[in-house]
Image (cartoon, rainbow, N blue to C red; front, top):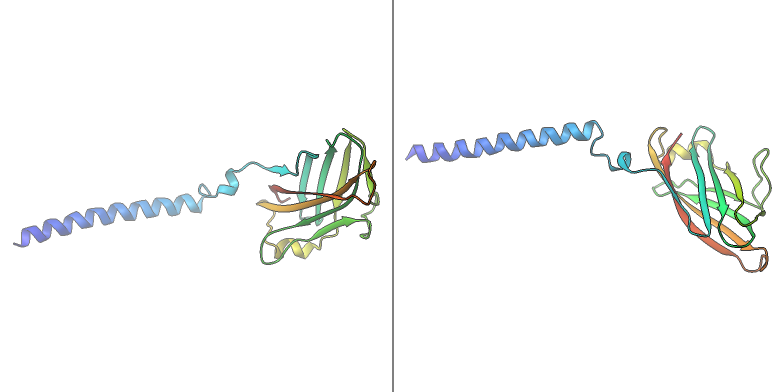
Length: 172
């Protein structure tokens, strides 16, 4: 009678040890970052077909989002406002517009970008403390949502358009 219960106990103990080994292996993989999906994802900048994102940088050291946009619209456009925000409890809000004072050496908006030409924008109106409060860590990847407001030069400022996209990059 006791041999049956001993066999059942040994059977369950063997499965318990196997389950424990699996948990330890998963814990080790998570500790070394193998299970971190953001480390495996490539950096990207998606804004839309109207504007090509040629290059981008999340610069927490200087508190800036730097972006190079190429006009793929088919005609000259006038960029009037660029805003960024992030997800999380504390949002990283940066705005580059006609009302925001540009950084030293930057051109005041609106900026006219001809078809096929590139515009360089540095959104530096973010506070340096906001970067850490928003959950961005230097060396880790972060996601920033971006909204570009523009109008075609032909139509004028009375017909604004918005493009929404995102930047997913390593915070430097």
